[in-house]
Figure 1 (cartoon, rainbow, N blue to C red):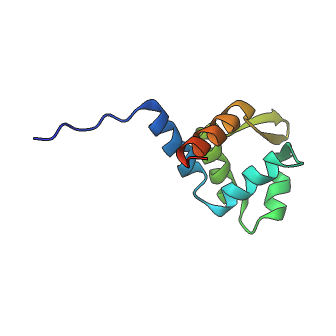
Figure 2 (figure 1 turned 30 degrees about the vertical axis):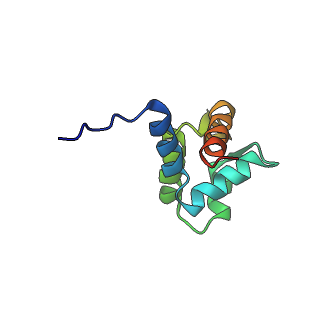
Length: 100
């Protein structure tokens, strides 16, 4: 009987990043936050994107769960920014994986 594989933490981390980036809305948000707009408010995103507020909330939740973004509550708004440390980790992880 074959021994079952135990996934290394770096493999699990990469899978979590990949899952978070597996939707065009989330890729758009990450591109926006990694570009000139280092932070933005969810209300601004809802006006830009062809989705409702509750759907946007779910996408932001996935990005936060993966550790790629973080939110700061500034009543009555929530400001979202990249989690720079994890964003750099994700970039290094994918770069190494892709052999560049």
